Figure (cartoon, rainbow, N blue to C red):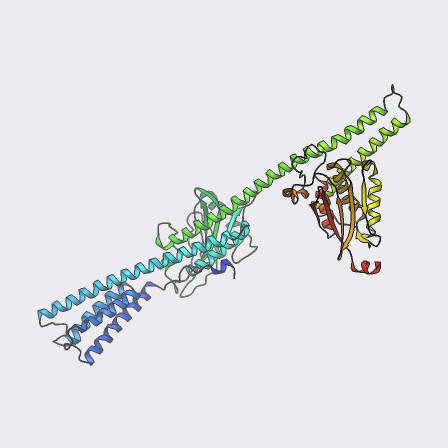
Length: 557
């Protein structure tokens, strides 16, 4: 059961006042006559002089359960019946002795005072019970709304809570209208009619309520022609002519936080005189000072505060998202512009040197310039490739085109085309001859290995060896690229795969901060995972896994 369903109903509606007074009168008369009959039949008076105190028990019982009216009526009936049936002369209201007058009047005064005190205690107990019930309902509302993070979920909690709590007060449906980005009021949550759209009359009325911050009622006028007053249009025609007409109507109430109106609450209400009095429903004028509707306003204010908190929290998250987006954009521009400018500057310098007509370059110099242009162009191509791959990963458009390929051949291919940047480096490979082929996207895995090897080259001295290994662990192929560089601070081991993240102290080293993030996205697209560890003796190792199909493993065996 959801939190919304646990919210208790505020109170059951009472019947018409005349019915309550009739029941109180019947109970008082029957109770008094019953006690009188017992005393008369058993001849308990005057043998027991204080037997009249028995009536006090009835007064106490009625005063504590039914209220002051029942207690007073029972006191009067007891006074009259005791005088008529038990005090001589019998069967008349005449009293012969003055002391009996005094006794009866003292009894009447005692009974009435006792009834008043008892009913006052009963009223206070009811007030305390009502306040406790109201506090519990408000607590449940706050807890239910606080358990929801999204604004739509909180709105749903509020509308269902209003119906659950005030259903006994005539509420049949509840909806919350909030302005959209264009300022147009739309139904954001409804307890009964999900997906409902506003009628033109309702939309116009809601807009007026929003602007004027005043409650409006849409009248039900099916029983007889009526003149509408104020702005409220006639919008609902559902009642039928009967002995007990049911008034169905709609109220639109502004949702306020302070002096600001944030939306409109639409209530579908029903007044049925067969079941309750007009004063015990929300069909009365919703005056905040009236005790009949004070709790409704308290409940509504609490709900509105929850809605406003959710709205402000969402705006705060949007502001934070924009701030992070701006920071990310600035980091992207700073990083990418630097990494683009460096190879472009090198290419331009080499090309400009070759184009100098007053300098006669020998063949070795020309080859050196051409090699520099090729290396910087490859570097530029990798950077652009990482940017494109990152955008495809974030957009969910990256789909590996897998085919079976030997891992050892893939590693040798990558080392082959990376020879220009691996010159002077010691690269050690440990690749068992019985490795099974793996289903992978060749170009994407080439990109992953290239990024990892280039990362090792960038952050380690030239004399530091690079070790590449591959082995099977169950149904996973584990490939690692290790170095003997400075290693990675433990606090950065998780964040190192974030976009544009750079380990503190490495900002002077070239790099966009995209290579590891792209590698993570490509590996996860293959159903594997990638992580970094520090090595004993210094250095870091990057490992990633690729799933190996059972069929290929069995075939290889």
